[in-house]
Every structure is written in C-alpha cells, then in structure tokens.
Amino acid sequence: MSLLEMRDCDVFYGKAQALHGVTVTVGEGEIVSLIGRNGAGKSTLIKAAIGLLPLRGGTRLFEGADETGRPPEALGRMGIAFVPENRRIFASLSVEENLRIATVMGRRGAWDLKRIYGLFPRLQERAASRGDTLSGGEQQMLAVGRGLLTNPRLLLLDEPTEGLAPLIVRDLVAAMAEINREGVAILLVEQNLKVPLQLAQRQYVIDNGRIQWEGGTEALLADRTRVEAMISL
Image (cartoon, rainbow, N blue to C red; front, side, top):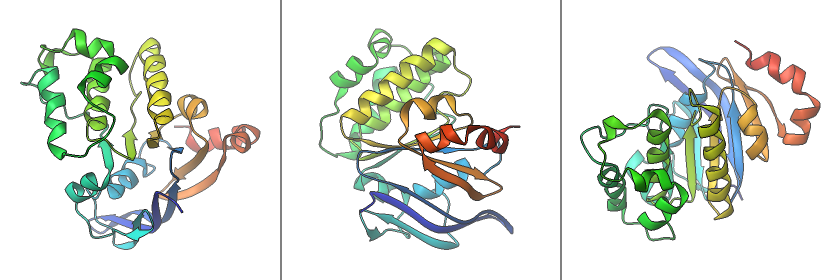
C-alpha cells in the first residue's frame, strides 16, 4: 500500500486547467522525484498533495484512506510536512524561534531540536540570528529543519536546491539521504536530473500538466536523452 497516492488528479487555476489526470504514488520510506521544467505542473501537484490547492477531479489517498477533503493543517497532523519553494522563513524571528514554532504540531517522534542541530550544525551556530540575516542555503536548512520538527512520515520538498551553491547542494543531498534513512518518505520536486539521480528510487517527469514518463532510476539512465529533452527549457 502506498503512503501517499495522488490519483487521477485535476487541478485548475480559475478556468485554466493546470493538472490533467495526474497520478503519483510514494511508498513507505521511499524517495520519489517529480521532475519538469518551469511551468510544467510540479509545484501545482505538490501544493495539491498538501491541500493548498483543491482537486477538481481525482483523489488524495494517505495510508490507503481517502483524504481528498482534508485541509493542510489536518494533513500536517496526519504526518505530511511541506517545505515550499520560497521557504517562508519568519524574518523577524531567530533561527531557534523559527524552529520551535514547528513543535506546536504536537506530533511525537525522533526529531527534536538537538537532532536538527546535529543534522544542520550551521543552524546551531546561527541559532540567535534573525531569519532575514540568513543566506539562501541557511534558509533552506531552516525550512527543512522546521518541517522535520513536525515529525512527519512524508516530507514534500519543492525545489530545495534551486539557486544554491554546489557545496550547499552537496550538504542538502547528504541531509536528505540521512532523513530518508530514518524512515521519512520524501517527494522531491526538482527541475533537473542531478539531485534526483543521487537520491530517488523512482522518478516521474511532468510536462504540460501531465505525467509524460515514469520509472526507476536505472530506466531513467537508460532513457536519459529523451527525458532530458522533455525537461529542457
């Protein structure tokens, strides 16, 4: 049984249809990537998965139960955490205050402040710094750490490495691998293949609001030229 299944999903912005019958599944403890160029529908799908966008058709299943009508806060309490592309750090709060806010969710689990600082030592160094003084990489670490403090079973990551320096990307990839080893499933949205090929067991390629390709990493490597043509700008 899948942990999350977005089945035959249609999503609209006003009268414009953004997703057309999209189906994506994430299993327990799995890393799945959703790859596509700008405007392909990646962020739309991940926002629909957390309930920020309504489904006009299709079903959202979590642990096999129909949760299509659940709002984001209810899905969060069930164990889904969302790290948005724009990170949404509270600029006037310190790093530690930003992190502690996430604990109000009240889900028990292995992730606490000490473990977040162990995963991202830079955050501990900057614990008293305001959110608006952080670099892009530090903000991304903070956003991921805040998501983990809800002790999720599934982490939704929207473009976590976009615009970051290679060394920061390397550290984030290592952190995501460690998070997954702790049993947290990940749905990873990315625009290129580099990071998904390092992390994900399965891949989906989306374009024009439709899934155009899906398969395991070995299949993607065998079909890489065609997949890269689909996601090129």
